[in-house]
Figure 1 (tube, rainbow, N blue to C red):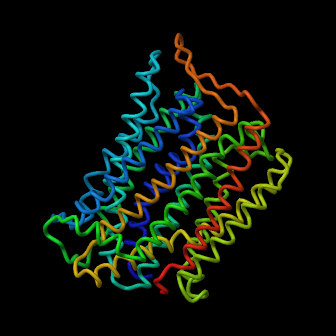
Figure 2 (cartoon, rainbow, N blue to C red):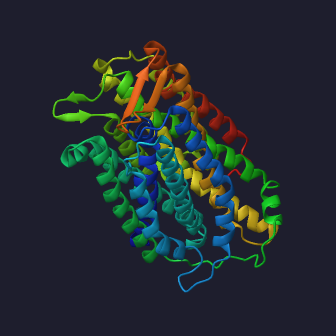
Length: 448
């Protein structure tokens, strides 16, 4: 296959950001912050929402800054090359739980490190997404690069989630020690993958630059109808994923009674979602062929979203018991088929939006447009994560910190309400979002 080495190198970028850091942040952080780190549910909700609102400002700025970068390494690659080490280091520090008996100090540490992590993620991931727009001008090649990207993210996500409980056992000690050591290891791996992506890819297309900064480029976005639809679709896709990944840990803890053993396999919440990851990886690879069969990216996206909606509703009617774990996995696999098919389409469609903007406005805003995709990703995850923490707190979950020992205390004031809320958050809420995704794609104006 043409440029196979470069496609694999490009896949490493999302294997690091999507398959390691974002996957762990999406699935482990809500439970980690409330049940291990010791934040209250209200503070955890506020933290995740504040961090993503922060990204609403930083992501477009980063996109504009990346578009104007000139260096011997190109326009977007230097951000990956020089941002890799800070990216991995901050991620590792975020998994370290300091021994602060004072809750205010603990909360300040969490807020500062999480905001820094969002900034580091933006500095690496926005240029990474924009890189697709300058690697090739061939539409089929863009689909292939995008597919490799998604396969890389899902393959690494599968490895990360499947290995997590076994690595915890291997590390030993209490949960704080486990998370700290695993955070350091995964942070180092993410940094190395990001660096390799920056060094081994090529920029072949020189952007048509708008040399001077102007607020007009931001105004142009809101006159770009395809961009509006794409941004709303991107928010919804990450809203959909955010609910499922963030609530999985709570589902195993409060609905299924903890880890489940099937033969020699330990199924906890990370392993459970790993079945979805490997399915997304396989169907992400099939996405270009599926798109050709459907006749357009838009139609392929609609069908994929409908599959996600139907299977999510079906999950709600599965009995809330560990005895039905294999049926639960089967339904999650079906849902992940749809998610795997639409995920590569999202970034390929953003490349179409960037091309449309260049033709319409006469200058390239590739970085700015792709930064809005990253912003939408974070905003969707933020809203879902914050809503989960808020709704579980309303349902009856209460988290606090022992002022003498610094240990985390979690209480349940209404067990039935908490269980029903968790179950609905994993099924009915994502189903509604998937239907909105399909509706937005139906009205999306680019018919490629």
